Length: 130
Image 1 (cartoon, rainbow, N blue to C red):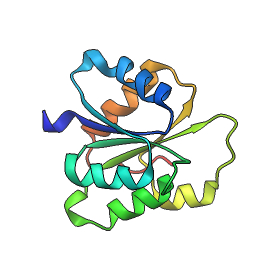
Image 2: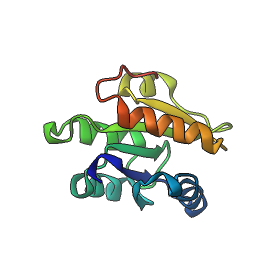
Image 3: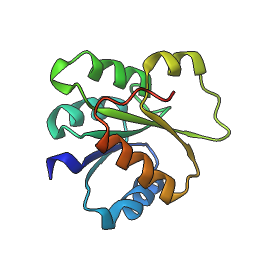
Image 4: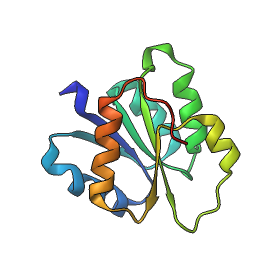
């Protein structure tokens, strides 16, 4: 089961629930957190292959969480899918530099979510698309 571990880091319980429902029949082991510092802690403990992370978390931002994880060699191969609202303003240059595996715009189509997660699980050395 370790290859199908996902961490959802979003302060919206609704988004956490939507993701769980969208992926429930695909056999994923899903943990969820609502805060950036908790995301780092859970990534260290849970060792997910894919992290679905909201761009603006309380505590630490998605970029700060990704940087902290990237600094730990034992967590190499962790894929980050950035989630943001269609109307949210983000620093595109900082996001590009951080090197997220993929990006998901909320609201999202569950089929698109499944596709991105599947690609994240299946391509350990994929080039960043952001």
